[in-house]
Image 1 (cartoon, rainbow, N blue to C red):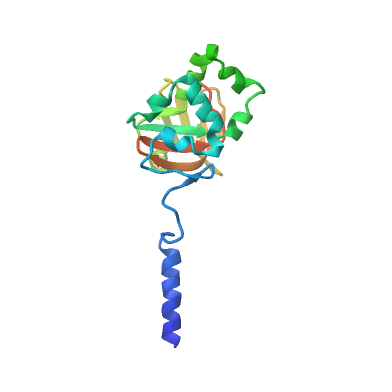
Image 2: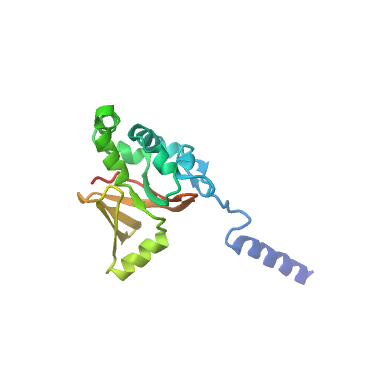
Length: 184
């Protein structure tokens, strides 16, 4: 009886301690939706209720085809709440057709060529005295450093955002969710 009890405890511990394989979904949840590594950046982003502003901006800038292409791309994806932190009227102004070039510059500043994982950012930072830098598709630079609450991304103007969900793998790259909008 005692050994059967121990065996059931061991089995339960293995089930819970196996990296969460039994209870853990293999597809991370972003904005209430599962993100599938077999779908591309746009196919996943349109399902996230936290990224409706970003999706609208990508459509207005005409970047849907680009972000649906093979890539690979690393996208630092601001949430709706991140866009809401901008001064009143900023998003509405950027979405106007006459501001397409500015909107495109802001959005492509959130994209780095290649698939860069959180581990790669950490290794790059470790090799460069705690700071990793990457050149964006827009041509500017993003700087990454470790903060008390995880990784901080600093833009060219000194603005910062935190990576809140890292390594959301896509068929054409990876998304890292951020809590701020980065400006070139």
